[in-house]
Length: 199
View (cartoon, rainbow, N blue to C red):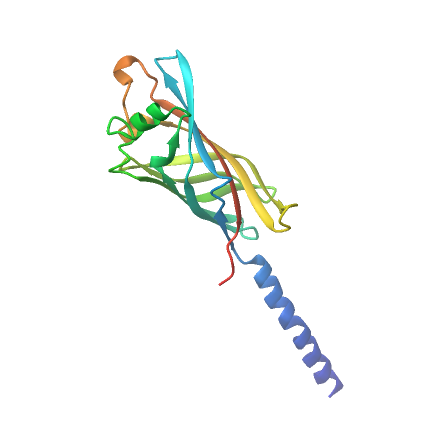
C-alpha cells in the first residue's frame, strides 16, 4: 500500500509538471507593433545620380514563434497608400498607376516561415511577397532578433531587423527604366512585436 501511495503522489506531482512544460514549449503569437514597425527601402534615382529612401507608415501582422521546435511563421500586411519619401509630391506619384497604383492595389503582403535558427533565433524568413498584384518568392535576411522584457511596460517584446534585395520590375513596377533607373531595390525592415492577448 505504501508503494501504491508513493506512486500516486508521484503521478500527482508529475502530471502538472508535464502540462507546465508543454505550455512553456507551445508556440507564441506576437502582434506587430505598428508604431515600431516600418518597412523602408532604398531605390536608385536617375541611374546612380542619387539614392532615394522612403518607408511605409502603416503595417500590421503577426509572428508565431516556437522556440522549442525552432520554427515560426510571419504574416505582414503593408498599406501602400502610406508610402512616405518625406516629399508629398513624390508620395502622390508613387501611389499613382505609374508605380504602386495604390488605388487598385492598396496593400502588399508578405507570408513566410522563420528558418535557419542559430542560438535559438531565426536568421532568415523564406516566403512570398505579393506586391502590385504579383506574387514572387522573397527571402529576408534577419540581422538582429531579440526578445526581452520592455523596461517601460514590464512586458515581453521581440524586435528584429531584416533586409532583402528585389527587382521592382519583377513586380510590374518599371517606372524610370527608360531613363536609366536601376530596378533593384534594397529593403530594410525594422519591427517590434508583443505577445497577443490570451483569449
